[in-house]
Image (cartoon, rainbow, N blue to C red; front, top):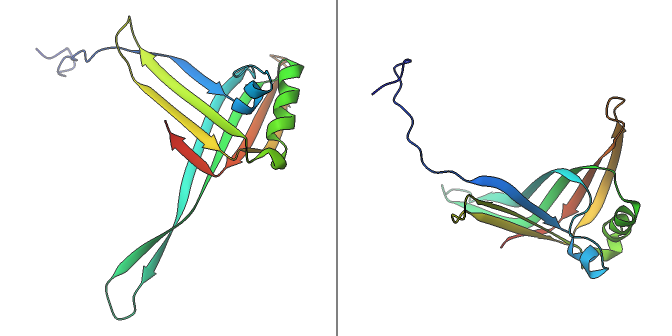
Length: 156
């Protein structure tokens, strides 16, 4: 029976929680660091590939040529424990470490023991490219924005 706005009543499709998200910096774990520990508030990642269109003269044929891949990540965090941040900057900020630097993040859902879903990704050849700092008078916390570049993104 329709509700008072003449809409069909909703049909419950299930529920899940979305409170399991992890970010792991494997290079820091190898140095004895914490999984995340960076008081991360937000993570945004973009991954793209170059595609060039090639046309043949005198023909309607089109070809796609796949080129290089590239990615960027942005992280918003609250500045926290110095030991963790110092190891993070010296590892991911050094372009000479790019060969071994990766970033792994996973998201898991579930509710009351019911099987949910999982999405996990790993970026390779990660280098920190930008650090921005800010503070607001209301909170008196130092907020930091970090930008990374990487060359490969793998769905695990």
